[in-house]
Image (cartoon, rainbow, N blue to C red; front, side, top):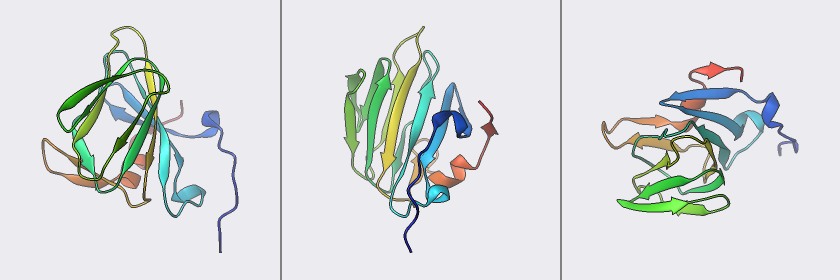
Length: 139
């Protein structure tokens, strides 16, 4: 049985506080019927970043707003609105808001609903879906 088509409105979705000035809105998830991918939007406060990590699947990121630095496999790439990345499974990466005064937003897609994040610093691995069930707020 296939899932029903849905319109997802950003203002009606929950936001997950990821700490360090990053907040994520999960969009396409198993909760809406997805069986093969995850996507959402992460907003970065000025100067905010997420730590170096890798996934068990391919990821693509599209910069929606702001000036970002994508560090992928040790190489820094400056990205602006509508620039995108392709990150193969297992490649360490992170995103940084390069501006000290303006926000940045990225749209990300994982190639499986079973995506995991392995933190480079600790080696800890967690399902992405578990992160989305974590610290929530209503904004």
